[in-house]
Amino acid sequence: MYIKRAVEHIALRISDMFPVLFVTGPRQVGKTTLLQQIAEKGRNYVTLDDPDARLLAKSDPALFMQRYLPPIIIDEIQYAPELLPYIKISVDKSKRKGEFWLTGSQMFHTMKNVSESLAGRVGIIRLLGLSNSEINGTPSEPFLPVRERLMCRIGIVPKMGLNDVYMRIFKGSMPALYANDIDLETYYKSYVNTYLQRDIKDLTQVADEMSFFNFMTVVAARTAKPIVYEEIAKDAGISPPTAKKWLSVLVSSNIIALVQPYHNNILKRVIKSPLMHFLDTGLCAYLLKWGNAETLERGAMSGAFFESYVFSEIYKSWLNAGKEPPVYYYRDKDQKEIDLLILQNGTLYPIESKKSASPGVESIKHFRLLNPLTEPERFGELSNMKLEIGTGAVACMANDLLPIDSKNWYVPVWMI
Image 1 (cartoon, rainbow, N blue to C red):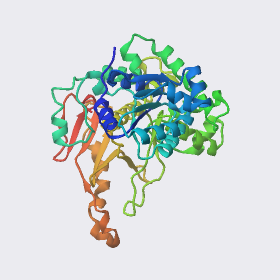
Image 2 (tube, rainbow, N blue to C red):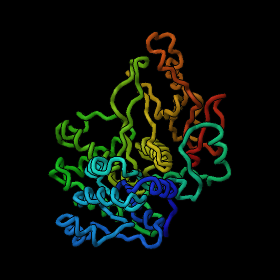
Image 3 (cartoon, rainbow, N blue to C red):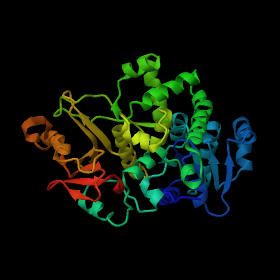
Image 4 (cartoon, one colour):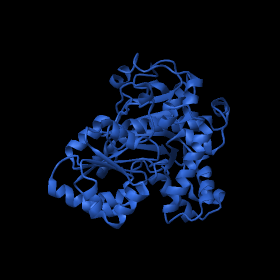
């Protein structure tokens, strides 16, 4: 069963604009399925997972291009970067849009190669797992906690209770889990083995698959927390430089996202460490050996999983609109935090995540820490840095969209 992806119209629009469309993302999030679903009749397909096709592409790319003619989908392009110069020659000669649709799982390798070889000729889409809107078949747009966008989702998005939300968190967002009846543990075990054995061993920074698996588990235990490389390195039994390199591998593989702190010369007391979120909470739960949704919901990491789930839903809402998520967070040296900040058109929108049905006004008390950003006249030469502070939100388990005060909202997590 195919679940319609929110990014379909973005992919078609990019294909009409560029000769090459490149869809990247983690393994098994549906990159190939998406392209095959929207492909016009007559578009050819070849996967470089096929050893014969891969050998031809690497040893004789010119002959490969003669055998597999555009318009075409070329799957897993990272296995044969030798093709990229020939694709460039082909599109420069034909000058037709949408001739080549490429997919790649290893952004670490492919993004640089594609960007350099096909500069000005390629439109790029990052695809992650299913969003709540895609699973429910409801409309999606980049999340902002503004009244108009929030109100239009009332009555459209189905409500979810606490057990439903944590079942979604525990299950994760991989399309195969929603299209078929698959045992979660078996699926994620296979997923991790494939990731370690095929993707990770191709990266020169990683020599020991089991050490990297242990490292992933250590990182999973820190989802929704600021990164401290020394602590991660100590717990994983590796050096801090290695921890930093391996984290970059997880970022490039779209397994985790690092959220940069929002800081400038006005907010001088903020810490500079990035915040880390696992992008698939189901994979995170598997790595940490949570046995079921009920145990996870009652466990010590319940709040951290809730926060990472909220983040991933907001993050995907922007990617699914073809936009880079403009997300930051706030944490100062007094341990005062704002879980998420969205910067859009000179306005900062603060967002907190609370696993509660009625978090109370205390949940927005740190929003006022952003007020100095609206008063640049006090800082002379920094007057050009004035920002507006927009409406804020507390993503929570409320039953309905409710106002906290004149500027902030309780937003049910299922409404994001």
